[in-house]
Image (cartoon, rainbow, N blue to C red; front, side, top):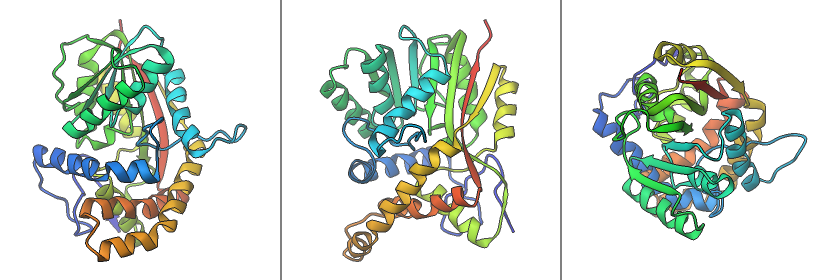
Length: 306
């Protein structure tokens, strides 16, 4: 059996030995992933409207197409967190600006998005101008575990499939607490472990996903709840949307299977980088994490006391 412990980095090719990368090296690895896979995401997953580097939300009563499901995720998080149009939002781990631009365009919020990738920040600014919301959004290069903002700056901290990139999730929550105004809210949406011990086949799938998405480790639901409580957050709520996420996992798997011949030929010709190939392999492996119930997909919302 293999055990995945909290707060350690499992992104290596040895499948079972933790890495000894420094914080800067971990950030460089994540930056490399997103910079090299930018066009892959636009081609195979999102589009120029949703700009979404995350799973979608599929409601059985309203069958969404892939790109609408990605947009729908923003609406669900917005509602669950009780965000209002006048709130000032920090999009912590903003990617290429999808959620920030959606909040500005659809809700009129003023949003600051941060990413550790200078290229992502540039892409996000370009997309914001194209969507005519450049005056409402500000994209900066910054680490959400060590932010350059003054305390009590934001009404909301939004982390959509980004907090998983923190080696220690408590570091992110501490910074979220610091930059939130009293009464401010945090919303975190991500995948969480349902177990910590895995057999050989399961371990291969888990580590393939961690390597492919430049994620050092995953938290479990109770662990994350405890971290939020220890930080001082109140009115903590956990919303399980695994059932509404499965269709996205299925879609990703089917896309990966369709692209398998292209991937093999391109890789053989030396046209794919290591990061791009690793990202492709996640499309297959992530499906196992859902179908074998190794992970669940959750939204956490909480409030900083007045």
